[in-house]
Image (cartoon, rainbow, N blue to C red; front, top):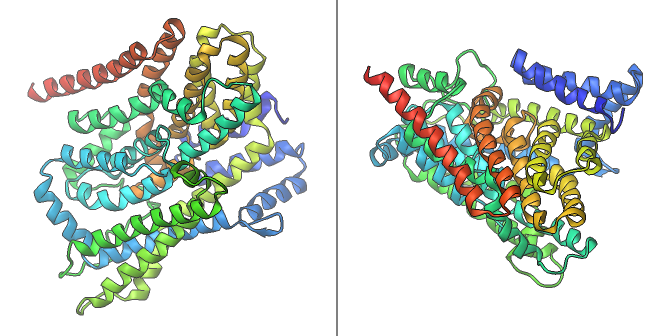
Length: 518
């Protein structure tokens, strides 16, 4: 079954079940079981052993603790605790009261959230969770649905980090490119120079970011998002009341302290940002051998350890603010327990997503999809478009952008070096863009899960409401990549892709406005 068309079965089955049942745990669990059965030719005992092994290796790998995964899970729990302290202290309410005077419209609240997503560009995990903590009090007060906030976060996290050389993603990609250039004898380009030149070719990422601001200011609510936004505006219900697994939601758990101040929210979050970024710089510098600069620091930084360190310091800060308040105040133990409990839905999903990602890796689903490109006789002009589509499907099926980069970037370099070197940078950029597109569409992506967590949205609601916007941006990017191949230019395809996004948003805006007037 490995490396064949049958390796697609678990991923396809999981995606179909998600759409039909909207139960992500059931869908992920089914995909894991079916994948294990395929690996072991339907031997039940061996399959259950495979499932246990994949779960066990999340925490213990090669006889040692898998500290990266443990630290990330611990950070999610710490984030839940901090969120609980921020709400119980009255900080979230005070910030919402203050910001509603400064940002007077729902569109402004959404635009501010998107702007925060642009400036916190060092890591997608950090972006997803930090932006949610800062923006949620503001968007809640303006009755912006949590699904809309999750979309804003997700569409300004990976798209921004994938085009930023000073980020964990940028450093990883540049590191891959350095090895590829050496292996293929490419000496005319330095990896950093090539990465910067690839930025305007990353059509999906740029289109997705533009779409976020247009959706915010032109009120382009389509598909399931329209239902969520309508309910939020008319009833004040920011989350579908039928959903009971919403991470980070503490709206009915605590009564906010009446003496809460804005700094009760902003200072702990500021401490989280400063402590995390400082830890990233320190761990990156310590792990770097030879020349130390920003690029080598972010290439070697320990993101999960940095998140954990920042989380511990931020929770302690918010706890001290809680203790400094006059009574009556909520029980500290209750706040800690309730905060940790709110993160359990996200942790369950993340554990199963990691497991099915490993199962799909054993089945070599990514290698099968990559082989379709590698074995085919292709017109060089179609390479950017085809690499975008294949990378999108691979990220959709496997749930990993970085895994897609690792598999598809070498193939893009190899194929273009043989067929047409002028398509090298466009094809590699198309791989990056396709991986982010697939990441936006799949329910098993880490970033998708953490964006829903940061926003306090239901996971499947986020996937379903984001999908139409991702598909529109992908259509615009696809047309752009066809033009890249035909014209060997970047400016015209970029302008065409962005024009499609603008035209779509404008048409929807005026159609809705006309119906409202009538």
